[in-house]
Each structure stands twice: as structure tokens, then as C-alpha cells.
Length: 305
Image 1: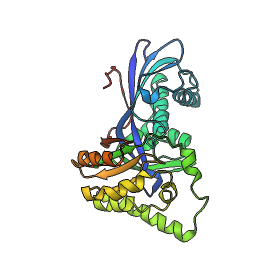
Image 2: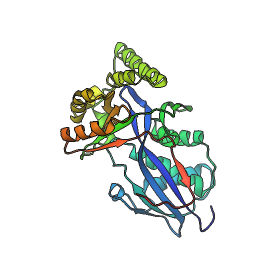
Image 3: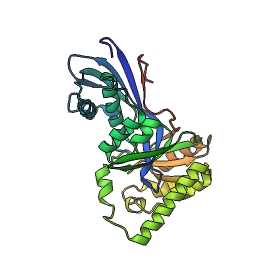
């Protein structure tokens, strides 16, 4: 980039799993992390919204650490920058806030060091950092993404077009991913694993066929993680029980929780959201759309709303 250039990086939020797609399915959502970047004599991160008010403002910031890591992989010195950080993605709520920050950090290095990384390269770098592709891949590609990460390769299949409303109930409390993983069993028996895998396969088939009622049915049959995490997120069983009468297709934990995702017919999201708010007055309830663009960079600064 030129000395006086400014640019904006926009990264969508994401929701992982959709029930049985544990650590392998994710969807990009219409909440965003946005960085306004310009060259500066030293690194500084300036939070602009309450969601990021507690982030580190110097080189201990995750986005800097990721950018520096990427620059070193290519043996390039990372130029310093001033970064204004705007976000409406809440932290530790199951909306991929850390994955969005990782994708943003990769894009920081990509632009500042003129790396010209492909989406595939960004996917591989971010999946190696995260350990799985379920959150980072939709934040890079947009849409719904099915993926598998291995130490030798990362594979994905993207479903860019999927026309639904997503109603999200976001509790006030945080749930750290480490705490949500601590309640999971260390192993499951063979017969149980076969059944869990078949359920996940049926979810993928329903997604590819855009069979929304079937998607909703299999979203709620997970055997990998939700049965163990339901005690941590009481909102899940309540929303699942009460929203079907309003036409919801299916309900699942968003990532590790505590947010709860409700898949709804296009146009019915608002009515379902209003009802969910009466059920969960202590939760933020919002109607979101599937982001189809993924991470992108603009050279002109835009005003956040």
C-alpha cells in the first residue's frame, strides 16, 4: 500500500455447527468486524464500539499477533498501522468473534505486505490457527460452508445461496469455548459415532438440496455436543420448544453457545423474534441474514452505522 492510503477490512460474524455439523459446518452472518487502517509510526488499535472496548490496544492485540505471524511466514517486515476497530459481534457468545479477528489479522498482513493471498491460502492459514474451519471459512467465503481440516490439507464446500431468516437470541452472559468443551465426553462408542455421523450427513444433504424442513429436522438431532451443553444454555430447549408453532424450521446452539440460532422462513423472522423476546427478556434478539460476500477490503473509508 502507498504511504497515505487508508483501507477498510470488513469481516462477517459466523455461527458454527448448525447442530450435528460439529467443528465442520458454519454460516456467515450479517454482523461485522470492521477495521479502518492507515499507516502510522507505531501499532495502535482504537476501539469504537462497546463490543470491542476491552481489546488490547497495542501489539498484544490478537489481530496484530496474527498479522505478524503471517508476515513472518513470508519473510516480510510488517509495516505499523493505526487501526480503528468497529464491531457489533459480541465476544464469547458463539458468533465467531475470535475467528473474525483471525481473518481480519490475516487480511491486515495481506494488504500491508501486498501478499495477494488467495481465499484458499487464507483458509489454510486461518484453519491452522483455529484448528478447524467451521468459523473462519464462512468469514472468508460467505454463505454456508462445510469443511474438514487436517494437518496436511483443508477442504471446504460452499453453499453461497440460501434464502432464510436467522433469528439469534444472544444471552447477556458469556460462555468461553474452553468451558463449553470441558463438558464434552473424551470419547463416544462406535455405534453412537456411526449414528452421529449419519445425522450430520443428512444435514449436509438437506442443505445441498435446500430442503429447509429437513434441514430444521436434522439441526435438532445432534449427538456430538448439544446433549452435553444444554445444561449450560437453558435458553436452547425453551426456544426449540416454543418457536415451531410460528413456523421455525429448526433451532440449534450457535457455536459453543450461549447464543441460540433459529432458522426461519424468509419474512417470518421478525414475528418469531418478537415472540422470542417475550420468552427471553434478558436476551438480545435479532433477525440476521446470511452474509454472502465474506471478508472484503475497500480503499475508501465508509461510515459505520
